[in-house]
Image (cartoon, rainbow, N blue to C red; front, side, top):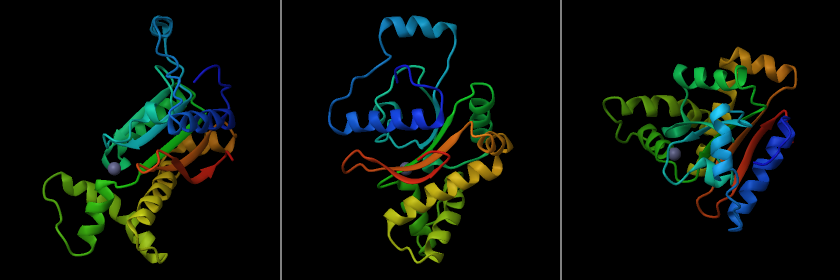
Length: 205
Ligand SMILES: [Zn+2]
């Protein structure tokens, strides 16, 4: 991400452009040269904080064609939230002053599928994996209450619910949104065509 102005809209545009290059096999792989590596010793100034699923098919920096020092990335299976995730997010917002938050789910998400199966009366994982199902379940129940029944719609609804949670559970996020200093988008990355499809936006267009 080269010389991008630190405003929510400018960063959002740059992310969309990077994804477009990735889709079209025109990736420039910026900010990975020796100069950049050397410069970064002095500190970081990422343009966005990204909460994404940990899935190996969703490498955040590659999807947006950015390099070192560009994104502050938090990844959990099913992009689920807890206090550790929220504290990392607030650190990025408050200390690093990132102007953009991205929540990214994806096509064929195992956490969403496992939760949908569990809610349909199937296997509920034991041990700590059970937390995954517990955290994703509310999103799927909301989706079903809206009449959605496909895995694709469950994945989208889970992104929307996660965006809502980021806002409602982080006072720093609320404050910085109110002053127009930060925008947030919810995306669903499609394995089929590499598009980070926009599910929801606030504070950017
Ligand atoms: Zn996933």
